[in-house]
Image (cartoon, rainbow, N blue to C red):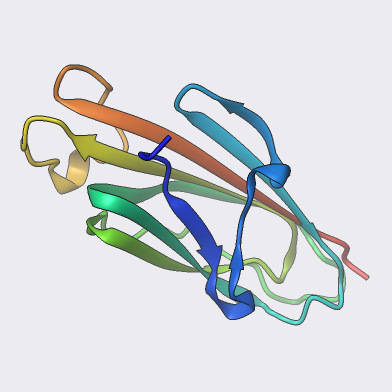
Length: 142
């Protein structure tokens, strides 16, 4: 639909397409993004672009199974929701076998604002349309 944002990995100039979507129904979209150990980027910038004004928030992140050659742990990332037609986050994906990021894209149908602390808890209804995005990055560790 036209509400669906475009999601890009800026460093690769790459748009994440539905071929990587393994659960895409209604307002929930889950993408599985495998990459190998020669990927070359420890962190990437994710850009969400919407055709009209929206509120975009990174609501949770989890980092699973640190790769053996890495001495670094990545930690919870968040950041303020971004009210714009573009939202950008730099996320570390280089040190763990799997990184799972949950984003929400919220459209206000009535012009009601979305408060900063509501971005991850507000529900769909007559005032808002909410799309849930889960991006799962999975790397080969060696």
